[in-house]
Amino acid sequence: MKSLFIKTDKTLLPALPRFSFPGKIVVIQSVREANRAISVLRKAPLIGIDTETRPSFRKGVVHKVALLQASTEDICFLFRLNIIGMTKELADFLSNPNTHKVGLSLKDDFHQLAQLSSKFTPDGFIDLQPFAHEMGIEDMSLQKLFANLFRQRISKSQQLSNWEADVLDDKQKLYAATDAYACILIYKELLRLRQTGDYKLINPDERDNEIRKNA
View 1 (cartoon, one colour):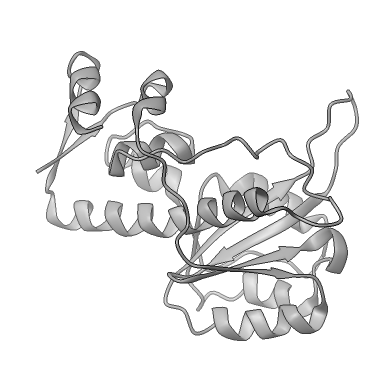
View 2: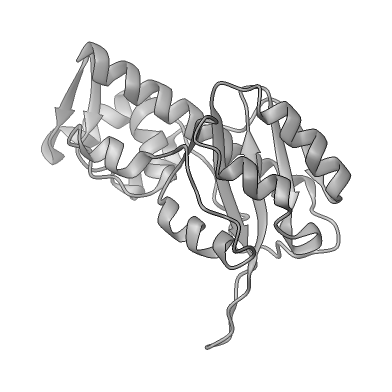
């Protein structure tokens, strides 16, 4: 039986082994490349979704979403929205109820993506937060939820990097792909545990010993 924390303490995360996306990463910078990527994604049974936005360090300055990550089990496409925008084909894909897409805290992503195209009407999405909460898990972040389920750590060191840079470096690409792919793993494991009931929730008094035992 798997032990799950009701709420994961972030101070416990540094001791965990680091997890990174193991598959192929493809950066999309043209409409033609985007259409090819979408044709691949349409065939996938489940797609992990996330976005990145250039951080603003000045009050009142807000940037538009710069990157959309869409990952299958073995390949992640990084759509550079600051270059190609929200194409009709991409908006149609994200609005298709028959393509199953999973992400975390999707309301914010939907709001940002809708600013790029009036044709974007999200459908076929599963949000991990309410899915986890129904099982009694209170973790809100991807990093904590992943650590809770797999006892591994997702690095957030690139979160505040420049997502509108002329060229994304390898660290940025791996960070972006890992976040999208992790959504697939989290959903599949939550679904398995939900169906089997093979888990127990650990209260705060038991939490520290449990995570250090499995680190």
